[in-house]
Length: 106
Image (cartoon, rainbow, N blue to C red; front, side, top):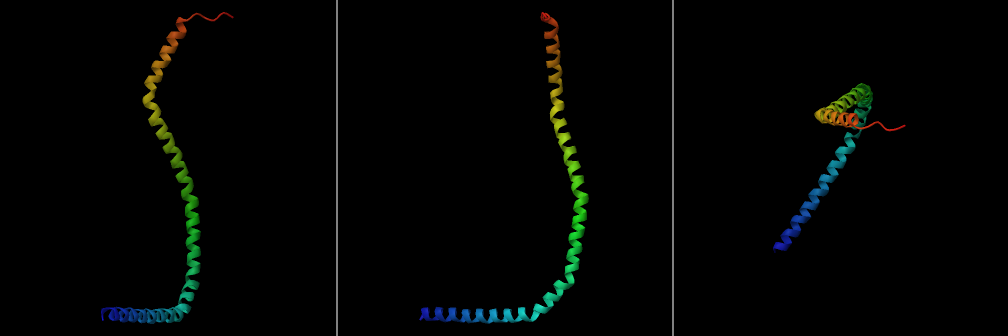
């Protein structure tokens, strides 16, 4: 009894699915000219959007490249500046060692 009800419910759902599919197909075919007309109207606007995006990228890309170079210099300076006292001490040690050694014979 329950199995026959399940089969009947599945068959009913299949019929409803087929009806919905046919309705969707008919509506899509009826609205196809309107969709094509919409594309025909919107195509120049899409081309203008692409043109404006190209112009904006021609302006923005060099600015971003300059910003990248400046940030690279800033990061390099931030990493090198704390090492300057150590470099100064190493230079002084080298200078003292060089001054204390004899000159090489030519």
